[in-house]
Image 1 (cartoon, rainbow, N blue to C red):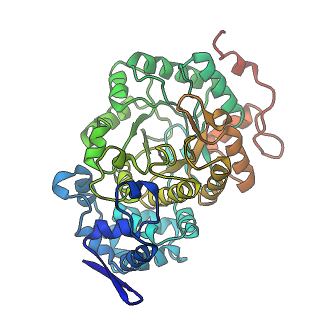
Image 2 (image 1 turned 180 degrees about the vertical axis):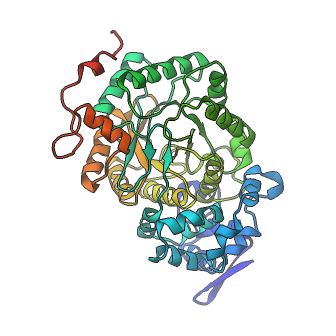
Image 3 (image 1 turned 90 degrees about the vertical axis):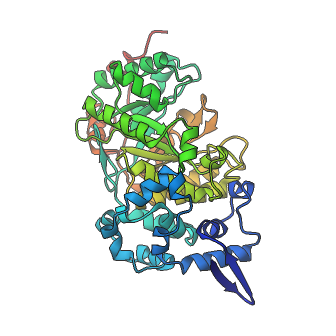
Length: 459
């Protein structure tokens, strides 16, 4: 039992998952699940009680039972007690203060990451303002590699997302070339296929690999098909760079995605065996989003932000090149408006970076949410200031296949100019070689090189 007194009233919280849920800033998904505090005063009481909770409590009380959830078993069984030791004496509130202090440097936080459980990170979130989340995340440095180097200080990478509603080769190629001319694509050139058929996925993989090889682009490609489709195609010799999969924070939610940890291990081993990386071997790409477990009725009475943090425990077990939260994609049932989306994006980014992940954010919203492009602009700027690893580059910021609003090639270019961020170093050198960087060292598209134009399929 956890308690806190506000004025003359004492509030009680029966267990850790209830305490975490009641302490969570208001969002529509937790309202839908019936998990929110009844009043603002109860929420503040829960935050007080949570701040006074020792971090060691999270090692003895699971929010989802150990016996019934392999994600919980992964969290518990892989916890690094030696890495945890420097903060083991702290409460949640003390840990927040420690993270904000000057002593919490990038090397210190990198060493600490294996000792932090997702629930500890989630707890810090619930007693932090947005500024805290930005400052703490900006201290974390996570570097990954495949054909280039992602996450170095002073860098901002971009996933080039050239989706097309019919997977038309010419339309996809045009979007890719548009993105490359504007400096996008160093994180990955990644297509969400309109269908998940092995034949279509193979055709798209082959097209991406041909473009990459002909232009000698130091980047990686990915078709975001289900992991079983990608695994099948690896066996048939398709040119797979990265294995993609959406993941969640409970075993039952992952089951709804058609996956488990054993399948992810098999896929990673298969991708590693291809040895397609040139500067590193981070071969996995994961996407997440607050509300995914609730939408699958697999949340076990746990709030959506805590479950999102648990998804990052799944991700870090497989040493991914990229992880991103598709923060507003699931819809207003889970994050109602621009304010809730903005907080969730900064929460997810902080938790992922603290847990040692190369964290990106798809700054996005659906057209039926109470959000607009001004909200997206604001969140994008906050995330870049907080050191986000990568963002999305979508033609016109409007994904015509998935039907949602994201960030454009121009948005990413504006953020690089505004904050002095550069692409991955290998990709930056390639842009310079193509004549796409001007004398002031800014990415500025010039005339379309003939070798680019030749890659467009015939009409």
